[in-house]
Structures are given as C-alpha cells and as structure tokens.
Image 1 (tube, rainbow, N blue to C red):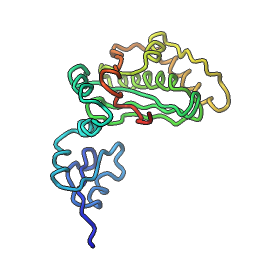
Image 2 (cartoon, helix red, strand yellow):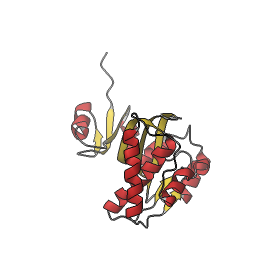
Image 3 (cartoon, helix red, strand yellow):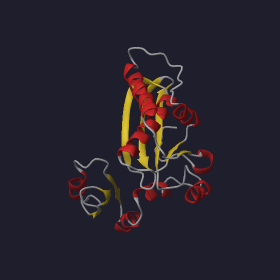
Image 4 (cartoon, rainbow, N blue to C red):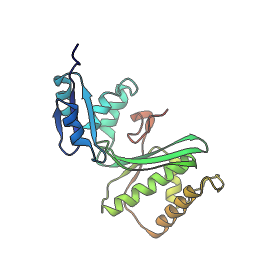
Length: 211
C-alpha cells in the first residue's frame, strides 16, 4: 500500500507557501531560525491554514483548552501590536527558562535557558527586562505584556526581590539578575508594561504549555 501524501504549510521560512512534499518543506525551513510550519492531510486543510497567520491558526486549534468567550474577549481587548513574555520552571526552585514572542504572529523573538536553578518569578522578571531591552534596541515603543503582577512590580521597583539564595547551581541566574537590575537603573523606557489577564483571555501566547 502506498504511503498517503501530505501537504506542508510554511508560514515562516526561506520560502512561504504550501508544499506537496517533505523535501520541499525541509528545504524551506532548514537553517531558518524561527521557522513556522505544519503538515496537513489534505490540500484544502493546508489552504485554509495558510490563509490565516500562524498565530491565528494556533489559536483556532486551541479551542479545546481556551474557551470561545476568552478568545472573543482577547480579540476585542488585547493590543496585538505588542510583544509578550513568559517563564516556566520545573520546581520552585528548579530548571527555569523564559521567552518572548510577538503577540500578533506568535513568532518567538528570544528565549533563554533552561538554567539549572531558578524560580518562575525570577524568570518572569528577567523576561520583562529582556523584552524592554530588545524593544529599546529596535527603537520600538511597542507595549509588552506579562501575566505576572509580581514581576511587573519588581521591574517598576528596579529590584528582583527574590528569596532564592545564591549558590553554585544558580550563579548564572544571579549574574543575569545583576545585569537586569543594572539595565533598569541605567536606562529609561516608555513602553507600556501591561498585565495579561489570563482569566479573561486564556494563557499568554508566550506560555510554554506545561500546565
């Protein structure tokens, strides 16, 4: 029996489009940082997906976990011309990482970690400062969303008020904290820092999906 053919959508790659073979898809995404692609069983499914942005496609296919009313409120209330950040940790403390994505497209723009020992609050703080520094470098006044009130408060006070004690395992994390605090004291920014309302809008797009 011959193997069923698939169709491949590439939203972000060396060449965007719909491809009828894995070889063509692979050629478009290999070596392309942040490539966005997915396979489909039929051309019609692929065409419908390609007519949406990658972020819209992902949102439409998260309906089982994100209620329709949250998606509707998100569409009305969120400023999609923005970036958003999130962190994840396995344990508290435990392995920690953080990242930032464009809200409109869902494209990842930076990611750090995993680090051997950190906390979710530290990751959220570092992600926010990293996002602010990224936007400053791009001369951009885009707003930045975080779902952590604690991290937002720490950034405004220019101090990572963690109770975690320095040790050999988290030396790299505390070095990042030191750099982040120095950046906050030595730089100014006008980017609005906005609270992502998870209860109203569902999980923040930068979420690592490990809940």
